[in-house]
Image 1 (tube, rainbow, N blue to C red):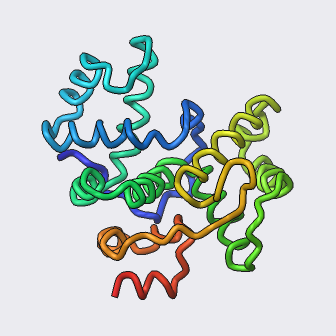
Image 2 (cartoon, helix red, strand yellow):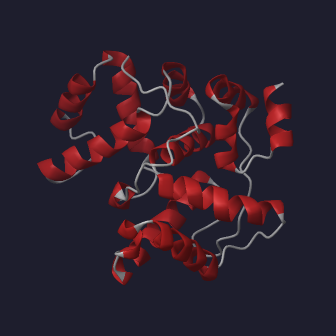
Length: 216
Protein backbone atom coordinates (compact mmCIF):
# COMPACT_ATOMS: atom_id res chain seq x y z
CA UNK A 1 0.00 0.00 0.00
CA UNK A 2 1.19 3.49 -0.79
CA UNK A 3 1.14 5.17 2.61
CA UNK A 4 3.26 8.06 3.78
CA UNK A 5 5.55 7.03 6.61
CA UNK A 6 5.27 10.13 8.81
CA UNK A 7 5.97 10.79 12.45
CA UNK A 8 5.48 13.56 14.94
CA UNK A 9 8.78 15.04 13.80
CA UNK A 10 7.32 17.36 11.19
CA UNK A 11 9.18 19.94 9.13
CA UNK A 12 8.51 23.25 10.87
CA UNK A 13 8.83 25.12 7.56
CA UNK A 14 5.48 23.71 6.42
CA UNK A 15 2.64 26.19 6.17
CA UNK A 16 -0.79 26.09 7.75
CA UNK A 17 -3.62 24.30 5.98
CA UNK A 18 -7.25 24.77 6.96
CA UNK A 19 -8.91 22.17 4.77
CA UNK A 20 -10.27 20.61 7.97
CA UNK A 21 -12.98 23.29 7.75
CA UNK A 22 -14.92 20.90 5.49
CA UNK A 23 -16.21 19.35 8.71
CA UNK A 24 -14.68 17.64 11.70
CA UNK A 25 -13.37 14.16 12.47
CA UNK A 26 -15.45 12.20 9.90
CA UNK A 27 -15.06 8.93 11.77
CA UNK A 28 -17.62 6.74 9.98
CA UNK A 29 -16.63 8.08 6.57
CA UNK A 30 -12.94 7.51 7.31
CA UNK A 31 -13.58 3.93 8.42
CA UNK A 32 -15.52 3.24 5.21
CA UNK A 33 -12.70 4.63 3.06
CA UNK A 34 -10.06 2.75 5.07
CA UNK A 35 -11.92 -0.53 4.57
CA UNK A 36 -11.99 0.06 0.82
CA UNK A 37 -8.28 0.85 0.84
CA UNK A 38 -7.54 -2.34 2.74
CA UNK A 39 -9.52 -4.26 0.15
CA UNK A 40 -8.18 -2.67 -3.06
CA UNK A 41 -4.79 -1.20 -2.05
CA UNK A 42 -5.09 1.53 -4.67
CA UNK A 43 -6.29 5.05 -3.97
CA UNK A 44 -7.58 5.60 -7.51
CA UNK A 45 -9.76 2.50 -7.30
CA UNK A 46 -10.93 3.46 -3.81
CA UNK A 47 -11.85 6.92 -5.04
CA UNK A 48 -13.76 5.53 -8.01
CA UNK A 49 -15.77 3.10 -5.91
CA UNK A 50 -16.44 5.65 -3.18
CA UNK A 51 -17.81 8.03 -5.82
CA UNK A 52 -19.93 5.37 -7.55
CA UNK A 53 -21.52 4.28 -4.28
CA UNK A 54 -21.72 7.84 -2.88
CA UNK A 55 -20.01 6.34 0.14
CA UNK A 56 -19.44 9.77 1.70
CA UNK A 57 -23.08 10.82 1.33
CA UNK A 58 -22.38 14.13 -0.41
CA UNK A 59 -24.86 15.71 -2.82
CA UNK A 60 -22.50 16.97 -5.52
CA UNK A 61 -19.56 15.51 -7.40
CA UNK A 62 -17.34 18.36 -6.24
CA UNK A 63 -18.20 17.89 -2.57
CA UNK A 64 -17.65 14.11 -2.84
CA UNK A 65 -14.24 14.65 -4.40
CA UNK A 66 -13.29 17.28 -1.84
CA UNK A 67 -14.23 15.15 1.15
CA UNK A 68 -12.60 12.02 -0.26
CA UNK A 69 -9.38 13.94 -0.85
CA UNK A 70 -9.36 15.22 2.73
CA UNK A 71 -10.02 11.78 4.22
CA UNK A 72 -7.34 10.26 2.01
CA UNK A 73 -4.76 12.81 3.17
CA UNK A 74 -5.56 11.97 6.77
CA UNK A 75 -5.42 8.20 6.32
CA UNK A 76 -2.12 8.50 4.45
CA UNK A 77 -0.58 9.56 7.78
CA UNK A 78 -1.11 6.02 9.08
CA UNK A 79 1.17 3.05 8.50
CA UNK A 80 -0.29 -0.08 6.87
CA UNK A 81 -0.50 -1.78 10.28
CA UNK A 82 -2.21 1.25 11.77
CA UNK A 83 -4.73 1.30 8.93
CA UNK A 84 -5.58 -2.36 9.54
CA UNK A 85 -5.97 -1.64 13.26
CA UNK A 86 -8.14 1.38 12.47
CA UNK A 87 -10.56 -0.75 10.44
CA UNK A 88 -11.03 -3.32 13.21
CA UNK A 89 -10.68 -1.33 16.44
CA UNK A 90 -13.50 -0.21 18.71
CA UNK A 91 -14.85 3.29 18.15
CA UNK A 92 -12.80 4.81 20.99
CA UNK A 93 -9.46 3.70 19.57
CA UNK A 94 -10.63 4.56 16.06
CA UNK A 95 -11.31 8.14 17.16
CA UNK A 96 -7.96 8.43 18.90
CA UNK A 97 -5.95 7.01 16.02
CA UNK A 98 -7.79 9.21 13.54
CA UNK A 99 -7.07 12.26 15.69
CA UNK A 100 -3.38 11.36 15.69
CA UNK A 101 -3.55 11.31 11.89
CA UNK A 102 -5.33 14.68 11.93
CA UNK A 103 -2.60 16.18 14.11
CA UNK A 104 0.05 14.93 11.70
CA UNK A 105 -1.93 16.30 8.78
CA UNK A 106 -2.63 19.75 10.25
CA UNK A 107 0.10 21.82 11.83
CA UNK A 108 -2.47 24.25 13.27
CA UNK A 109 -4.29 21.54 15.22
CA UNK A 110 -1.07 19.84 16.29
CA UNK A 111 0.36 23.06 17.67
CA UNK A 112 -2.89 23.93 19.44
CA UNK A 113 -2.71 20.62 21.27
CA UNK A 114 0.99 21.03 22.06
CA UNK A 115 0.91 24.70 23.05
CA UNK A 116 -2.51 25.09 24.65
CA UNK A 117 -4.10 21.81 25.75
CA UNK A 118 -0.98 19.99 26.92
CA UNK A 119 0.29 22.74 29.29
CA UNK A 120 -3.21 23.28 30.68
CA UNK A 121 -3.71 19.55 31.30
CA UNK A 122 -0.29 19.32 32.97
CA UNK A 123 -1.22 22.22 35.25
CA UNK A 124 -4.57 20.55 36.05
CA UNK A 125 -6.35 23.46 34.38
CA UNK A 126 -9.19 21.60 32.74
CA UNK A 127 -11.21 24.49 31.32
CA UNK A 128 -10.67 25.72 27.76
CA UNK A 129 -11.49 29.42 27.55
CA UNK A 130 -12.06 31.71 24.55
CA UNK A 131 -8.99 33.64 25.71
CA UNK A 132 -6.83 30.53 25.24
CA UNK A 133 -7.79 30.41 21.58
CA UNK A 134 -7.32 34.17 21.18
CA UNK A 135 -3.80 34.10 22.64
CA UNK A 136 -2.87 31.14 20.46
CA UNK A 137 -4.08 32.99 17.35
CA UNK A 138 -2.13 36.10 18.35
CA UNK A 139 1.08 34.08 18.59
CA UNK A 140 0.49 32.26 15.33
CA UNK A 141 -0.57 35.42 13.51
CA UNK A 142 2.69 37.09 14.46
CA UNK A 143 4.59 34.21 12.86
CA UNK A 144 2.43 33.34 9.85
CA UNK A 145 0.88 35.92 7.49
CA UNK A 146 -1.69 33.37 6.27
CA UNK A 147 -3.19 33.40 9.77
CA UNK A 148 -2.90 37.15 10.27
CA UNK A 149 -4.88 37.67 7.06
CA UNK A 150 -7.83 35.47 8.07
CA UNK A 151 -11.17 37.26 8.49
CA UNK A 152 -13.11 37.23 11.76
CA UNK A 153 -15.67 34.95 10.11
CA UNK A 154 -12.94 32.49 9.10
CA UNK A 155 -11.40 32.54 12.57
CA UNK A 156 -14.77 31.85 14.16
CA UNK A 157 -15.28 28.91 11.81
CA UNK A 158 -11.81 27.54 12.57
CA UNK A 159 -12.51 27.70 16.30
CA UNK A 160 -15.93 26.07 15.90
CA UNK A 161 -14.60 23.14 13.86
CA UNK A 162 -11.53 22.70 16.06
CA UNK A 163 -13.64 22.51 19.22
CA UNK A 164 -16.00 20.02 17.59
CA UNK A 165 -13.10 17.85 16.46
CA UNK A 166 -11.51 17.89 19.92
CA UNK A 167 -14.83 16.88 21.45
CA UNK A 168 -15.37 14.08 18.92
CA UNK A 169 -11.87 12.76 19.63
CA UNK A 170 -12.48 12.91 23.39
CA UNK A 171 -9.99 15.63 24.34
CA UNK A 172 -12.92 17.85 25.38
CA UNK A 173 -15.95 16.54 27.23
CA UNK A 174 -18.34 18.47 24.98
CA UNK A 175 -18.55 21.45 22.65
CA UNK A 176 -20.59 23.32 25.26
CA UNK A 177 -18.62 23.00 28.49
CA UNK A 178 -15.25 22.52 26.75
CA UNK A 179 -13.58 20.84 29.70
CA UNK A 180 -10.24 19.23 28.86
CA UNK A 181 -9.87 15.51 29.48
CA UNK A 182 -7.28 12.84 28.77
CA UNK A 183 -8.71 10.04 26.60
CA UNK A 184 -6.52 7.07 27.45
CA UNK A 185 -5.81 4.78 24.47
CA UNK A 186 -5.77 1.03 24.82
CA UNK A 187 -2.45 -0.69 25.30
CA UNK A 188 -2.82 -2.23 21.85
CA UNK A 189 -3.18 1.18 20.22
CA UNK A 190 -0.39 2.72 22.27
CA UNK A 191 2.06 -0.05 21.40
CA UNK A 192 1.16 0.14 17.72
CA UNK A 193 1.59 3.92 17.57
CA UNK A 194 4.89 3.60 19.43
CA UNK A 195 6.27 1.37 16.68
CA UNK A 196 6.50 4.47 14.47
CA UNK A 197 6.97 7.21 17.06
CA UNK A 198 5.70 7.11 20.67
CA UNK A 199 5.73 10.91 20.78
CA UNK A 200 2.56 10.85 18.68
CA UNK A 201 0.71 9.70 21.81
CA UNK A 202 1.26 13.19 23.19
CA UNK A 203 -1.36 14.38 20.70
CA UNK A 204 -3.84 12.56 22.98
CA UNK A 205 -2.53 14.40 26.08
CA UNK A 206 -0.89 11.19 27.29
CA UNK A 207 1.95 12.02 29.65
CA UNK A 208 5.43 10.61 29.13
CA UNK A 209 4.97 8.50 32.27
CA UNK A 210 1.76 7.02 30.92
CA UNK A 211 3.38 6.48 27.52
CA UNK A 212 6.08 4.36 29.15
CA UNK A 213 3.48 2.35 31.09
CA UNK A 214 1.22 1.82 28.08
CA UNK A 215 4.03 0.73 25.78
CA UNK A 216 6.00 -1.43 28.23
